[in-house]
Image 1 (tube, one colour):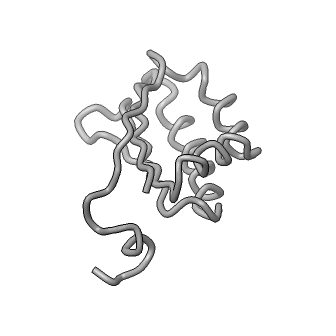
Image 2: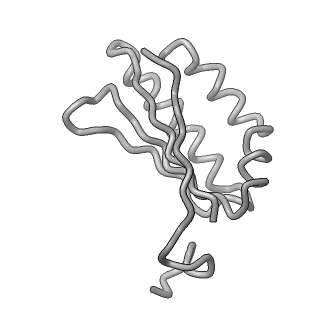
Length: 106
């Protein structure tokens, strides 16, 4: 799995708009064949900070995601909402193994 945590710091007045745009993007993203999981989480002690947890089956699936219309709509909508540029940290899974994603076989 190719796991990406995208850290986003949003302008205070844009929190709800960013939240809604990101949830809309996530709703479409989870329908993509190459995505095992796509979470939008919000920090509880600073509501202007979010992390998008994106789990792709392969690195190429992340590239395919970036070509979708819903990603491009999200990207364009949120670009002016951020205090600073978003940044990503990439991971690989240790547990469960790749077959464990998307089912209850743990």
